[in-house]
Image (tube, rainbow, N blue to C red; front, side, top):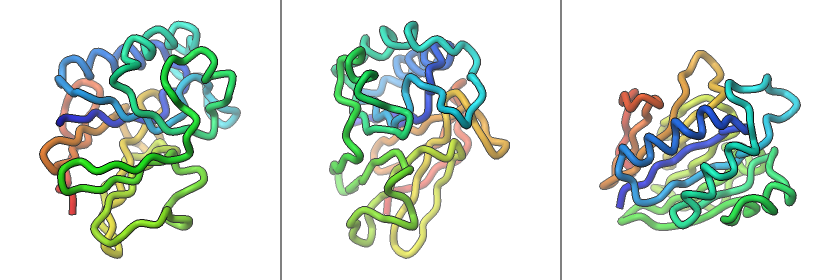
Length: 181
């Protein structure tokens, strides 16, 4: 099964539409969203195309395909307008031989880990900076930000398919890849 993984849309209908278009072009079956969907947050500038009310139908159109965890900017009022669950602090699932712990990254992170076993993947957003690194027997993965990239990175997402993670730009260019461990 092919999964698209994205984080930190922050209310941008412009980049939300680009993400939905990439989801279709990728032919992914599931979309894992790592939080911060509708609100931009007080520490961020408004992203291009900031229009949370316009982003809502874009996301709701994909509701049967979305798995989502709560970001620090996501609230109960956001859940009232989104037609898929968004308020879980983390999700744990197995894809093939890969166990993935997915969270936003503001509560659980490298310094405050969920109970992973060696060889499992820790997937998070929040920093807006893409990352793929293996450390202490874990694989740390961050798809960066769809709408507000930081640290000199590009607007990005990840694809997971057949045990391989690929970091991609919103135009579909592969930046780097890493096999699950």
